[in-house]
Image (cartoon, rainbow, N blue to C red):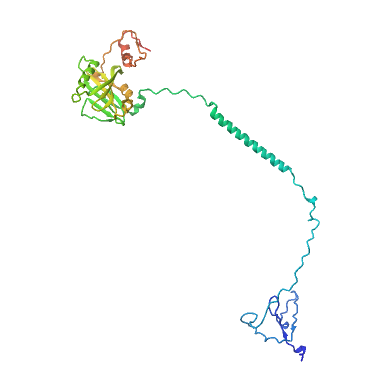
Length: 360
């Protein structure tokens, strides 16, 4: 038996895409007139009984577990893409392709050639410079004349500002020595003045009496005789060489002597006064160092240039030359003429009638 249409129950079907059950048509809210027109709800008539309506407040998940709901599959037919038909502007035509210009390639090739040529020129220039520096004579300016050789006498090594003065009133002498030298003997032997240089070499001034009428050579001969048995009956020294020397107008003698008791070789300058003999000795601090390399002997010229006899010992008797001039040309033997000393020349000009001076 068919149910009349007016008595048939209306069932609401969930939306296939969103799964939301639309509200009945009589519960739709009327939209404002300026809004988009809504599509009226059309209920689907079905002869199957519809499950009881759900309460307004629902809990749990949707759709209910007892309801078999499977979202419909997308049954839309695939969209057919029309085949690509190129427009006249995109069609390929051989005439539309611009052939590659060969000029840039030619320009790049020319630039590479220039770079290679420049590199070759630099390489050749460097090679020529190296060959010139090694095989050609130097073009540097001529060297200046070499400085004159240093004087054998070390007087320049001891400037005046670095000197100390030794002045003895009792023994009538004065001399200057380097200020760095330290005194060794102090009052033990009043006639002995001994100083030590930083290299441990020593400089001594020994003052001894000279018998009246005794010459320097006679004095030295007597001392050599005493030295033969002075060291426990054996010789105390050995004379190696002897050379004449002048110290401020006074004729003296420099001897190289070996001191046998100490095993050292030194040099001594003997200077005669009126009543005394002054012995200036230079002794190295070690047997391995020659006396000429010692600091004391290097100051020899400074010492003899500053050595003066004072008081009664300073009165030296001079004899007038027999000629108007004194020959002061350098002697091949190296022995200086005592009459060429400034002190003698000054005295001779003042006391010798007709004397003119030194002949150089």
